[in-house]
Image (cartoon, rainbow, N blue to C red; front, side):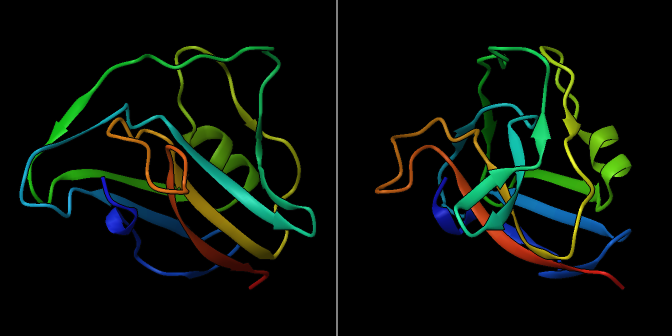
Length: 136
């Protein structure tokens, strides 16, 4: 998947609204990704990007499965932008994840870590897109 394969329905949300994120195959050939569960929501702090999720497990794991997507096919997530909503929407059979702290207005990003193709140039194995969260 190319870096432009991720999109958001809106890039500005209020607390309590729903983030709708898409990862789509934007090529004309079939592409593979990992599972749908390999996403993260990160907030931007002065020291960089940090995940809002945490787990009590020392070494959480993911299934190493591949999903084939035809052109313009992919995954869609509908994620309620609240501490409880995001905790309840993060499903992973290997570990129980939860949002570590109260969500505050600011800059966040949706990140998908399920890229199985060659490592993206200077980007690691993830693609993502920022969005802002406001109080109202």
